[in-house]
Length: 189
Image (cartoon, rainbow, N blue to C red; front, side):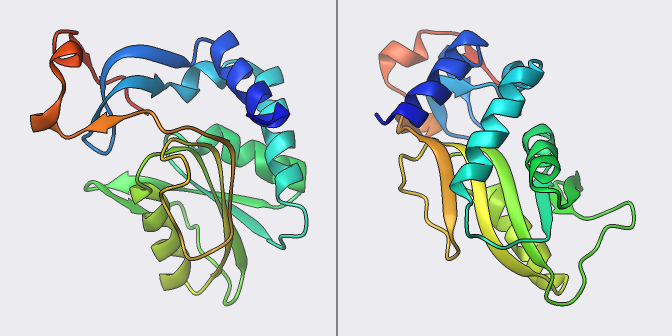
């Protein structure tokens, strides 16, 4: 593990944001590990450091706007926009689909960076990519704190993450007995 990844893991551990137990992820998969980024986001020193590390990995990527999906990406998205001095928008759920509300929109060709906290399969990131494209913007790239697929989730645009881990996940009907014995939790993003 490189020094940046170790520092990020240390931040998640120190803020008690990396949980162990039996969890149902937003994707519906089960896991023995859960990144509760809301715990990190209580600590502005941690948020500032994570955003600084993420923006440093974006060197050379040109973007005018940051788009983050609510709820998980809100805090880190806003901090990345603040550090990079760009516009900030967020998408929110309406009838279980991410939409832009509050008068948010894109100028034709506007270069947009999608920022998310944790990605397992990338569903919410893909929804954001669709919003940008359908809204006339251009996707500049994707930035995330944690890629829990260990680099297995691919997007067709430049993508950076601070930490890549691949904790095992299981379909609901394939949860191992050792995990099934632990009461299940759905902490929320």
